[in-house]
Amino acid sequence: GNSVTQMEGPVTLSEEAFLTINCTYTATGYPSLFWYVQYPGEGLQLLLKATKADDKGSNKGFEATYRKETTSFHLEKGSVQVSDSAVYFCALKHTNAGKSTFGDGTTLTVKP
Amino acid sequence: NAGVTQTPKFQVLKTGQSMTLQCAQDMNHNSMYWYRQDPGMGLRLIYYSASEGTTDKGEVPNGYNVSRLNKREFSLRLESAAPSQTSVYFCASEGGGQRETQYFGPGTRLLVL
Image (tube, rainbow over all chains, first blue to last red; front, top):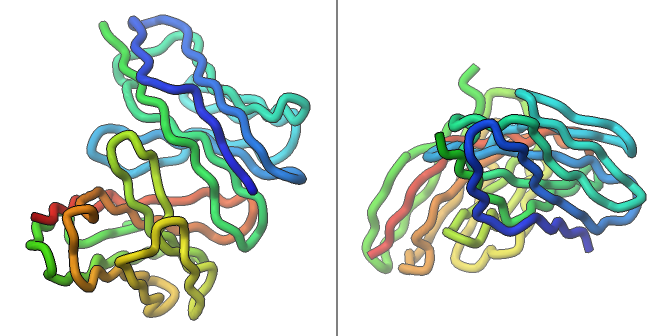
């Protein structure tokens, strides 16, 4: 079946540091890939997505590239801010009528 | 647009009590989902509804029932609450296609004593 494996957290960085959160997946065919972010006390919201191989999703300075050859969708940001502190979830969706598969989430804390 | 709304925001129950969590979306989405989120456990799917009139079990359906009342509303019922059901419950909706984003509600925090 489908699965998503995320880098374990928590991750603690200083402001302006470079961020990478690893995500790899297992699925047949060509799923769509997503990163969702959850701020404290809120529901998840879409951060970025990519729907085919070699696509790059980007938003708010975050980027992730859909790598079919390594089945990965790693999240990166060049310079994190305190306001980026949140839980980040990698997810995939495989079929039109199916449900999404989520990773376990990675907690990021950015210190001033 | 309100997006996805959930009621109540917070609830305390005693073991054995029943309650219904309400969810509604105003985006004309076909698919709706109920998840629970526990510390260190990520999101776990309880039930989902791919379209109006259909419901399917997720990975943790025991102790829950759902109703897709119409296209807008998807409720989750706990018939006899247990302390193990203490969690944060999220409802989500999406258009239904492979490329579709899920939209989440703000969550219901449930404490079962």
